[in-house]
Length: 312
Image (tube, rainbow, N blue to C red; front, side, top):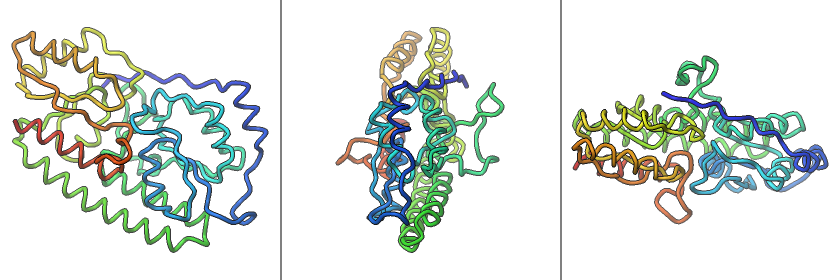
């Protein structure tokens, strides 16, 4: 598993001045109306929407198909975060180029919640070569994302006690839905022959999925899409695919397809017969109105794509 540390964003003087000018945001005791919440990624935003309901006024910074590893906050983003009462992000360095901004918000009176960091440390996957870092893609193990949901539910109940009953009810419903989804994913993967339970994708985002559901996972890039795949990486993975006689590899909605296209060419040059089995949603949800516009829809769409391609 390769990992390239993401550079910490040096916030521009303009962004910082806009942030400081906003000052401390009024608390819910000082004003009426829904709780103003900002989410970083679309996956986090969906979790907030599901649990918060009408009690929150949500703004999500990153839309469908946006890569959080490479996302740099604009001055407008900084204003939105500073004006929020609650800032929810994934954490574990997923939003690598936002690190300093996220840390600064917590010192300026904005409640910050890193939902992936609510997962019990012993259940996190370490990053090879970086003892203090963990793989941030926890949502691909549905049980772990249920832990994140419980953490968010409890945090919203604490921050906004007047609406605690609603957060409790919706949060519990989400956790129940996730339990059903977790069972469904396991059943679908179990329908594949053992030798076909292999997933090759553009970057190393599915390790939690592999551990939870018994799938061998290989990513061409490292955990971060800021990494670059060299010729040796492509050739090594191509040899693995050819030896396993895999029918399909997968592109990702938030990663350019050229990496996997180069890989399929290398496999087929070895006499293999591999195709691109479809596009998976890794670090972002799908477009509004589509089958992957929600977290549950995204998981289902991914599993159906994987099982359909690997069953051929």
